[in-house]
Length: 385
Ligand code: SF4
Image (cartoon, rainbow, N blue to C red; front, side, top):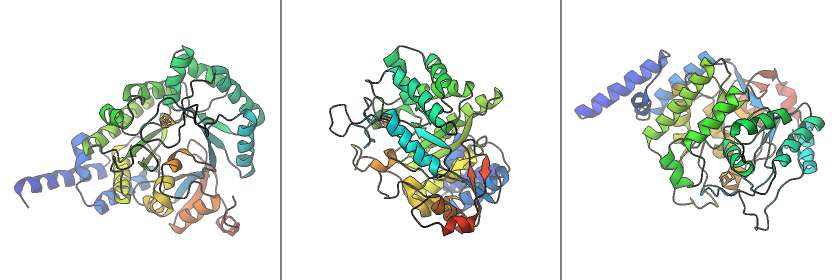
């Protein structure tokens, strides 16, 4: 080993030691963790997870993604979901179709919908406000977490109103949360290459900051595999951590959690052009997220991108949550190579129980609302709720 390699290794080991004492790491220290053996990093990440969250419990949410329209004028190169207006399979759901999907969710004890679409220039503002009112009137127990920062940015242009005004109108109509979709890598040169018209870092934070100030539920996200550098990944963590500091200092709840997955490029213009990320890189980045994001309590494992088994392993790499059932998922699956796009409660309970944890159904804010009876849940016929 050369002198400089020995020095780098010592720096990385010191950084990990510092993290294990609960101290905050800077960019260089976060980057150094990527050069350590994954088992060492995972040991610290798992210990932090056990300290920061209920040690024996792994949570999950019963929810449904509803993609109200696939028409989109942003045209991200990594997206296999969107259509232009003229394509035969372009669609926009009406309120009855959306209600039908929510009734299916209610029938299995679901508590929230994650409702996002393409950025559709043909829909009027009233489509959204009346849709929210319709859902609140007909499905009062369901939380509505809807519209990514990209959609809000589109609404600003289409309706000639500020995000501030738009969020007030949406909240008044029934909006409960604004998912932080579109985080990907929060570095504009990565974003520019992957999707030239994609929302930029400044606007992503501007809109989520407003949402947090208004008390909306938000979550931070990340997607790896665009060919980003380790420094860019570390910087992404730092930006999210800064935003969380700001929100918490203001007395707000900030990001309820952090969700990270790997780029899926099948059926997209990035197929063969972006490296994607392996299961190893996924677990490594997840473990580092637990260490770097010292002010975000809940870290989700992602099964739609990596499959059930890797998501189960993630419960020992810093994750304390197994995401949600997703009775329906259309966006990651359109570009994904895994054929599982939904999970039953039985499957999530089994994955958690087999890993040695107690499964707990949670709400959007990661608060436990029910401990399912494991024997009863596993006795349910496979393929049902
Ligand atoms: S990722 Fe979202 S914004 Fe980008 S093209 Fe797909 S639907 Fe549109």
